[in-house]
Image 1 (cartoon, rainbow, N blue to C red):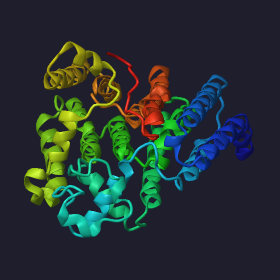
Image 2 (cartoon, rainbow, N blue to C red; image 1 turned 60 degrees about the vertical axis):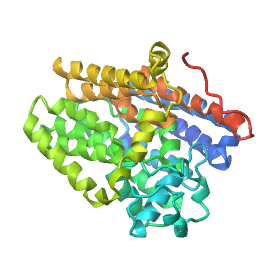
Image 3 (tube, rainbow, N blue to C red; image 1 turned 180 degrees about the vertical axis):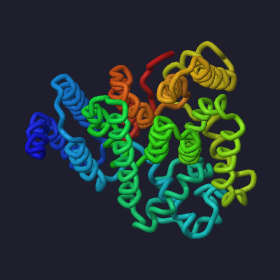
Length: 402
């Protein structure tokens, strides 16, 4: 009887899932999306509306379909995208290169991809790597993942499959968090069926999902009263994509010595195998922090007001961490503080690629934040720059702000 009830409850969402599957199938068959940006943006917009309607309808009507139905559809959507080559972003080729270098027993931080020392490793994908003159910026846990994926296979599908597993982990933790806080399980749809997540994880293969997995695990650990595990999870998230290290601001006032000791130990252990890179260990990160800029939101206003680019970046950093610190000092929960932290990151980052919005989406689902969910739905407009550029035109970004 229980299975029958679950099946009946899932029926109203079946139409939404079918529509989403059709849309994702169209994207999978479209080939190089950088040459079909208009098609991609149109399909993405429609899929976003369907996803939001499914979640809203399910919560409004109190549909109680078990999360496994939502997860099954989510897995299908992602599997459909894995075979498609990434075309809206070229980050995946750098990941694969780093994994190849590590497999050869060479420190990926020691040499840029165009170094003569690595010439023997060049393959057909080498020319697709972005900024080949700069050493890798991806931290230790990401490097371990790139190398581990080589055990599955040397192609992009192997690494993307690993990211999909991480994404399923994110969804599993969200299910647990929703149940623990007695929030509707249907909110999972806002993340699990989100077209931005599906495309950026399963098709583009962005490493961010590895860090997001550990951020959600930190949410679970803190909710369960296991703050040391939360510190460990946040530290591992930072070792995947650096940004989450800022979440330690929530733990430091509570247990300063224990937090600092545990985080420092994990960071030291993570970086230890790569210390041989010497001065180039953080060369890529330094270049990114000083020079990269793409479609900024609030930072664009700061840069227009502050003439010195470095001063503008420092001011943005101060505002971002300051807002997080004030939130912490006001006694916010970890979930609330993390929500403010990632929201501030998106508002004040000099570089705002569409996939950066993945970091806020677990919180948008948990907290039913339509504002951030809508912002993420609009994020792919940033790919409009590719419409002319791929045909030899100028690189011209959308003027969000001055």
